[in-house]
Image 1 (cartoon, rainbow, N blue to C red):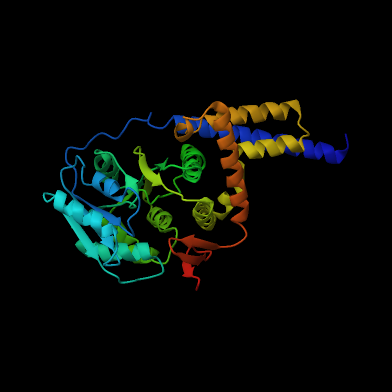
Image 2: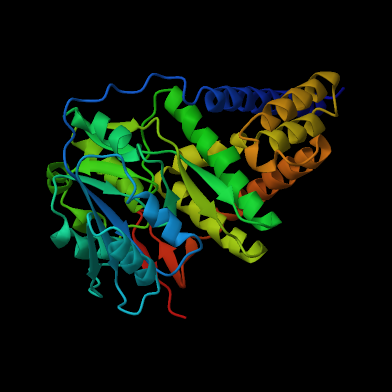
Length: 381
């Protein structure tokens, strides 16, 4: 065997080994979810304002918003916000206001644009209606359990905590593209977060839930500090950590409905996620290629000329990979699951490579360029 072949074989074996090790670690991290003891309920719970920025009548919107009205919590307020007085999301918000007259439900309708981010502009417009000093931000497509507020707010009673954020799980609607999009969340992104958390990192925050105190928000400059940012949720966590406050990854896992109509929707959505991650964690994103365990292990085996050692590593990687969040594809046979995993991971690797080619993203109906600092700039049509 020539020197070049030895180098390739060694590189391939190393790639397969790293991919196998990561995939095993991800499977373990995911399966440990929920085993840690929850925080003890305090004697008293503070009043909370939930901020729900809305845009459009998304599938399942009414059910998602209703779950925030059915909390087993002593005192909370929900503020729904839209920028367009003709926004169809108002139908669900107004329906809930009529169905829950005993609750403090408010609707903010304000078209004022404060920066490049329409979502953060919406939050700024909602703040005058917020009555309480504990705030919970949650995207419109999030479904929660009745004990959600209690479990999210409890860690925030520690003054050393800056924000509490929730992991989330994708629930696919019908169709292959929605299933693949949910697998991207459940079997690539969130396992990577779980592994990072297990290794001690807290450099994350998710729009699925961010809970923080009003005083903390004021110290970082309010929502105005992130009004031009695409990764607005990540920046909130980053700014609070700069104050010396901790980020807590909640034990609560919320659910988001995944609805991708076709391949182009799936590609646009995942490229936006990937390019956002690339912006906020450039080095980590480069290294994240290894987290696509199965195709990386296969590539390593190919480089090693299909050695017995690397083929065993591929088999172990595939087994561990099947153990990661298999619920959405559990109805499939084992060969069907392997096919889905291979397709999803291959698509993920291709999009990861594609994400390096440009900083342009699609967000709702607009196209934007992401600057290196995370700010977004509209691209004229």
